[in-house]
Amino acid sequence: MTVKMVNGMSGGILMVSRNSGIYVSNSLSRSRSDPRLMNDTQLYAGLGRRCIIWPRNISRLFLTSRPKRPRQRSLKAEAGWFSRDEQKVGAMSEKSETANEDILIFFFQLDLATRAQCALNMEQYEVAQQFRNKLAEVESEVIKKREAKRGSTSKGEAQDKAISILRLRSNQQKAIENENYALAAEIRDQISKLEMESLAASAKALALENVQYAFRLGQKVRHKLFGYRAIICGMDPVCCESSSWMETANVDKLVQGSNQPFYQVLVDVHADPNLLVAYVPEENLLAPDKPDMGRFDHPYISFLFFGVDTAGDFIPIKQLREKYNRPRHEVPIDTDDEEDSEDST
Image 1 (cartoon, helix red, strand yellow):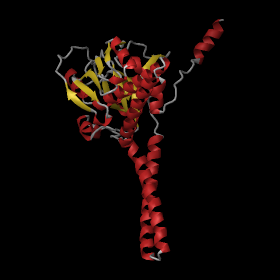
Image 2: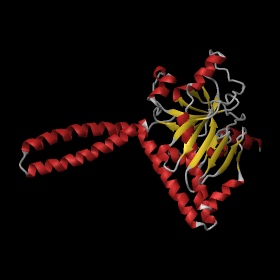
Image 3: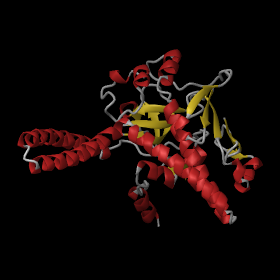
Image 4: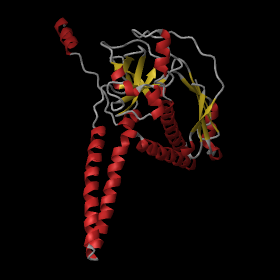
């Protein structure tokens, strides 16, 4: 895969190898010292024959088509009663361009933050400030996208209703002062209705915030139906995809439907190099019975994780954990092994 970032702070070519290596060309250094390059940035990702154009105004983010590439032959993981063709069609139904875009934007944020710090280290303060300003723009748009997600609407709805209640109370007080008691009584009824709706929205938002996830960031999992291995790299309390995506993925046929945690997963390239990023419901994922120490290759691993723990799972970087507000996972110590080693001594 090749990610190309040109005419902007990330000017240059980012080569991502099949074995998860990432290489950056020397042309990137030019943007660090030349603020004139601080204009529109285009982020090309050779995934699914599409490219992402990232302009100065991030709200204008859109997808454009790229020339078709010949499909690569690969070894497919067998999935029980599914034939090879059925497995291929079924697995691709959970492919998510939205999840892939979210990951690339996250990498873009990391890149901007790194370049800002690099400029500070070289005492190029004006350039560093421009990087920071661009990063602030990106983060502002990311927050808007996050608040627009289905799982965040309840919290926003509760806040909007609380503001409306305050406004109505002010109007009610003015009506009482003007001795317009009929209007005051009407406003009182409106306030009572809004308070009940606000309470319900707040309860729903609290439930979504406190949802219990069965899987954690960096954990190796296997798809229950299609058999491929994957790594958790993101999570939502409910399905946040579009209605058309949910229809294609047959979300309505799931036991728990769309109201269950959904996970962004990186699919092992040896299982299907054309899938790469999928959006999978919790009920379709399985944790391995024993530590999975097998090799796992994916082009995004290098910038989302910084190593593998003793259980074979990947360790997410701090920024990824902060993005999803997840604690650092500590591998439990095997007390049986310790006792055996003490007895042998």
